[in-house]
Length: 338
Image (cartoon, rainbow, N blue to C red):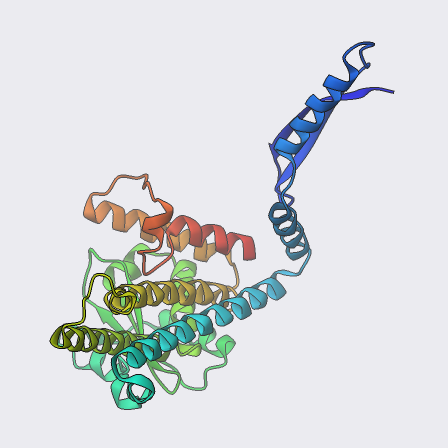
């Protein structure tokens, strides 16, 4: 019978880590100290409970069909979106309570949730732009056929209007409105620089935003954010007028921090909605890999346009300040669901 003399942890696939063991005959002397050495080494490299749970979850998810995994991720992201909105609402209620008690909390929340306080970026705003041109079927039949195919897969009853922004050096796409009245805008540079399949992937991503009513969700978050700013500033002004000492007061500190916390929650919500749209878009195109290639092409173009280096050093902190997940993260996410 041999004894364990070495443990080496190596990277693997879904399981995260594997352990390689080497054996040698036990020494006649020092068996106890060797045992302690082995136990200590094993403890230093052992799985934590979190490692094991994450590895098992990754393995179990990898066994599911791709379409089930996409729907699962969309459901998870919907739950995260709900928690972000709930966090903004709770933060607003707390700021209102600090400023005006229970009545202040009620007025603050109901005011932010009123439809007139959350103006939606409607399709009409895009139509009024002078530097934009609406496309019709005879202008680009292939593009219209592509958009219509994506629309039917998405289950939309109405074809979105298609506009082209004459920007040859810009590669971008936008979606505004609600499913009943939506607009998709593509830049001229995107139409020139993308293949037909990549354009379909970009259109599918924008169509996913429309189907999920992401414009309404982000408008609600922006309304809550604005109201948090107003209530926190008015509460601080009221404290100052009453002579309340601001630095030592935890309530004053919370009011001061509330706008920044709300901004972080809005950014997190935006990133969640982008990943959810990516997962939805994969269900609307024939080849999921084209979405990854389109994202990589957009990243290369945008870096070249602003003269950024090809390698971006992003810390965990700066990732929280993004409105979109990093392209590397999105491409990895898309490929894991392809």
